[in-house]
Amino acid sequence: MCPRCVGNDWPREITGGDPLATPFLQHFDEAGWSRDGVDAVVCTHLHVDHVGWNTMLENGKWVPTFPKARDLIGRQEYEFWRTYDDEAQRTMLGDSIKPIFDAGLVQLVEPDHVISPEIRLTPFIGRTPGHVSVMIESEDECAVITGDMTHHPCQLAHPDWMFGDSDPEAAVLTRLRPFAEWADQPILVIGTHFAAPAAGHVVRDAAAFRFAV
Image (cartoon, rainbow, N blue to C red; front, side):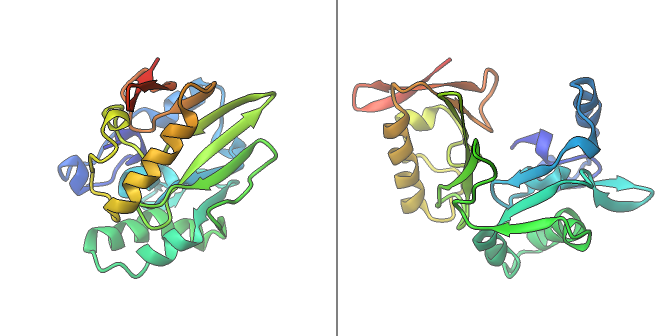
């Protein structure tokens, strides 16, 4: 679980039914950002622990946390989940996704969407039907924000280890290909679910890989 992205005030099953009260927005301000200063929000996929801060509770109503941002959601991902027969997922869509649609902030995008000359999405299907990661390239440097294509550094050595992947076979291939491409390259890999330090590099380790920080 990534509690930072569950958001506050949600009585989610993933948090044991108790709402969180994290200082996320306070830390956001302390880092020199403002809610109005965010112009794009990327949802790598639509799991409850990745969309919670799309909205926040204000005067008893769920409102967009970043009211001036484009919320980029994969078209394929959204089309799959909006008809998924699961009560918890429908609840999440209603309070974390619907308010940003109602506010006109959502942009449904393709899995290879280019956000800017430096930032683009890349599809890593398997964890969910429309999962994407975020590639960042600038001044001859490169980084990737994994999302859920991998959950733990142990999966570099064991890419066949599963964590609730919707398509296990595709998920294994999804991990193997980029691990091989990133290995021993100057590509900073930022593991969304990795414990700190969450940023490092993929290196070859005999027939498999490991995470070096």
